[in-house]
Length: 317
Image 1: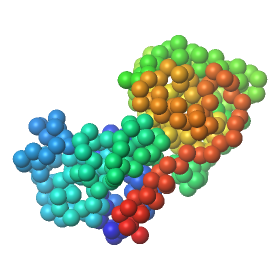
Image 2 (image 1 turned 180 degrees about the vertical axis):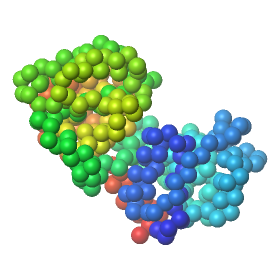
Image 3 (image 1 turned 180 degrees about the horizontal axis):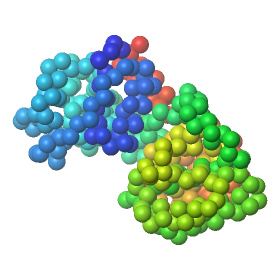
Image 4 (image 1 turned 90 degrees about the horizontal axis):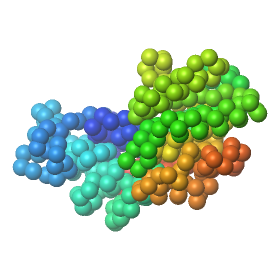
């Protein structure tokens, strides 16, 4: 099952889905072929349900590839769930990441965050999301972004997301975060290293740019700012401040060995609130409103744990 070209990752190309699928393949040590698939109507709307002619859902290239399926298929997201189902009808073992919203028994294994409350004999729950952040990844990031290590400490990474279904994020939130960090810099010195995301609203980006226009701090908001230093921020930060809106962002921050401080976690709702509560109960995050005092950290490395369970369940060696 570990020979070249016999493991495929399948996603819709969304960054979060690609990151989870490739992180699992990397943790398993499997060379892969990476597919980015876009289903056509009517399969796009009804995925992952099988319909007559579903083998044509992703176009002629994937349809032809079905004749020689891989030993292992790793999919992430609802569109990929249709592809992994199709591959399992051949000889492939199929792993689906995230709740497929139909019976999990259509796959060999389903990996889903605990806050989704998905249960089943073949379900592997995890806290947060799969990601590539481990000691080797951090070491590589420190090497690639070595200039960040020369910034004055303490170095504080500020990771800014955007509004989501379970949390609103606006300019007043950014102002509160910036006021807290300004006070810390006045008292301690150091550098703030800011990274926005694709979901960060234009008004929030504008606020960040105005605030850090003339200072010595680092700011990355979009491609015109150059190479995204996000991996370097995680690797070189002595503490991390996050908005509370993104499970993926929080999972990656918590996979480092830096204390993580979250702005207004109590305002989150639903699945996101359950995730934040679990992190707080584990002692992995503190609320930003309680201050920036350091605290002992055990990195959240769920990807390695899940990969080991996959090896045991599917006899990958």
